[in-house]
Image (tube, rainbow, N blue to C red):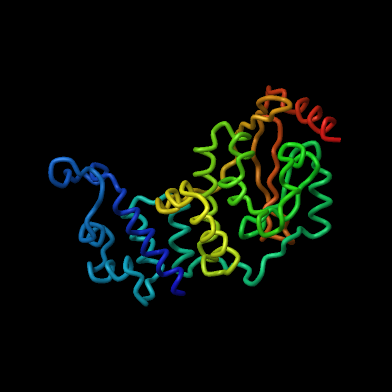
Amino acid sequence: MKDERRKELGLYLRTRRNQALRSDYGLPPVGRSRERGLRREEIAFLSGVSVTWYTWLEQGRDISPSRQVLESIARALHLSDTGLGYVLSLGGYASAVPKGPVAADAPAHVQRLLDALDPNPSYALSPDWGVAGWNRAYEALYPNIGTFDAADRNLLWLVFTDPYVRDLLPDWDVTSKRFLAEFRAETGQRLGDPDVAYQVERLKEASPEFQESWDRYDILGFESRERLFHHPAVGVLQLEHHQVSPSDRPDLHIVVYTPSPGSDAGEQMQRLMETAR
């Protein structure tokens, strides 16, 4: 395990342990009021590993836990399937991810796909969550996207630093935290990559909300869901959020917003695109 992943694994395990609800394990509170947090000894016992070994894991020591040990610890911490996948990726047991610099722009055939998806707002997301391409419908929904340099055209950076996005998302507080948790789940193996490390560090400096959420170590897998957007020109749009990956470019995610069933979002997007044109 590389140093960055060892450190991340230790911090993640410690955070999950400290946030565990003792009653879920049939354990009484510590003292009179401490209802959250398990001792290292308790997790080690539940996992079937020694306290020393588990302590070394949390400390980010240079050790190589087996897949079986990591799975056992994940079960003891009651992690979700996404949490388990994250732990395994940090331990080196997930599929290999592409290395090296991330392309700033989507390849031509991916851009043509995005264009064909009009009037459904769509964009391509690179492994470090840079927005690598988008269609006219997405630019009509979020006109600022075309004004940023490639280095700043990162979804997390835009969500946490652009006031327009805060106004666009009526549930910004919930959505921003969810995006961050999904980002963390997807980028565990890339935490040492310059692109990812750069985005994380500058977001910590730029956004107290990002720093607070980052320190929670929440992990979530992507799920298609309804999203609300409050656009100044057409009001509230109800859109479904979907994500797919081209088979020849699995490093890219294509994000597509389609009208929610029974909503007026289709007509609203047509009007919005006509106004933008």
